[in-house]
Image (cartoon, rainbow, N blue to C red; front, side):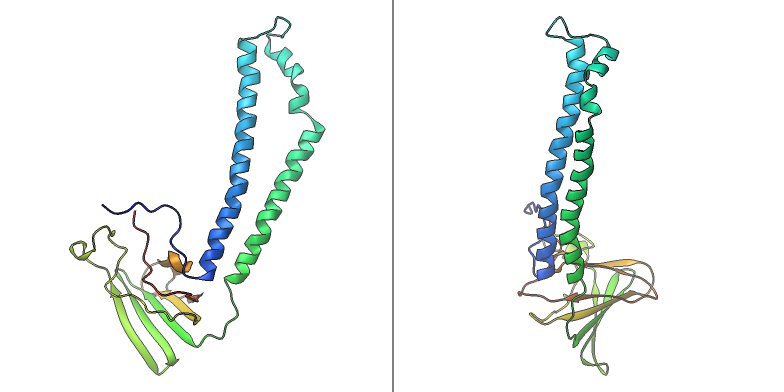
Length: 219
């Protein structure tokens, strides 16, 4: 039985480490917002349903109209409206600042001497490595493995018969396109996911910081 994998793949680039840190940073605000909204939700249900139908004191007005009048300072409160206007703005600013910084790292300024060209086909990928010059090109194909050839625990359509070699601590420019339909070239551990579009060249920069074989996480 394959091991259950939760969360992100083990990062192999500084970019992927930044993506994981940004995700954890945003999750703190999401949990806070979730708890706050649930508290408001259950408080309203309790006040306008439970208290109305099951009063504990005789002087509590049992009509909906009377209770709406009694709880009006809670639902129409100036300070409360200022609070839930300013607070989301501050949350968005605190999320936007690291997000903009992360977008900056997606376009690093490196001297790129090593270029990979990735070409998507219907059932396989073609690779061209322009390591030295445009005249010295290494070409190979990555074909999908048949189900009977898959290692135990690996999923179909996620493994090929060859792996793309990337040097460690050397920035590589990866140019991605397609020959037929839309594809998506993705390596989670490298923090890379780029669309392969026919007639269009997209590119990403890969800077691996450790050795390894980086596959899709197995579930």
